[in-house]
Image 1: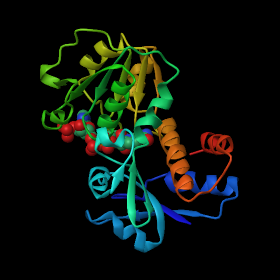
Image 2: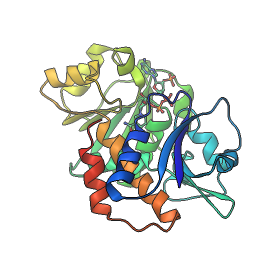
Image 3: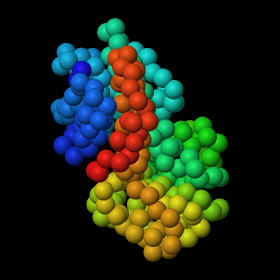
Image 4: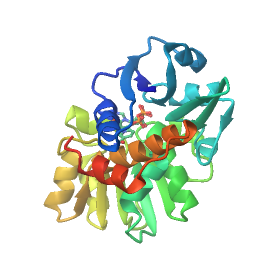
Length: 260
Ligand code: NDP
């Protein structure tokens, strides 16, 4: 059995490490690779590479959604998939980013959240938070992408004047990769001061956003656990599609303890 992560760029993806480690621990004869796609095409062609399923990453999650014959769960609402499986010449699509994120914060009892950014991952997070009845506001630097957040309170930086305290502040922008703040530092301090948790989707580095939150004595979390949880859920979908029975507790233990 072969699986892969598909995107562009793709070299940085840690998914092959996680999935191949799980195959090894669980004694499953399978391989997970990476595939760099030049441009959008019908994702059915991935089957001709011998793949049984794939994870989809930037920038193809929305186009992969439209390639699916059927989508399940919250993927319908988000209109983006990060996990597809091939079955009887059909493509079935799922979104495990949303639930992967929620597993990271499920033990907290947050009432409201502010998401910085309005891209694909912000959409996934907003949908799951709404489903879990957590009041969610979106703040983005430009207005265009905010139009896809119907049913949410949305602001651009210029129009935003915080009227309430937010328990959870999520940085769903790649600003940390550029070593910059997602919004003006002074504005960020005002918001963070009243928060319980600052969550950055970027992983593997302490971003300026997280450093600032820490300096204000706010609890912080990076995107590593989200990456791991979405991978666990995708792995379960892959194996279920192939009728492979395995120890789910062992999978969770292996992926959670894997040193990325
Ligand atoms: P998108 O490209 O879809 O969206 C990016 C958003 O961030 C846009 O709203 C954009 O604003 C805004 N933005 C981009 N750069 C800056 C900046 N320098 N300052 C302020 N705002 C900025 O990205 P995704 O939503 O797919 O991903 C966002 C981040 O989350 C990435 O770094 C990605 O690697 C990470 N991620 C982590 C995951 C995990 O498992 N840990 C899973 C998925 C994503 P505008 O609309 O104005 O362009």
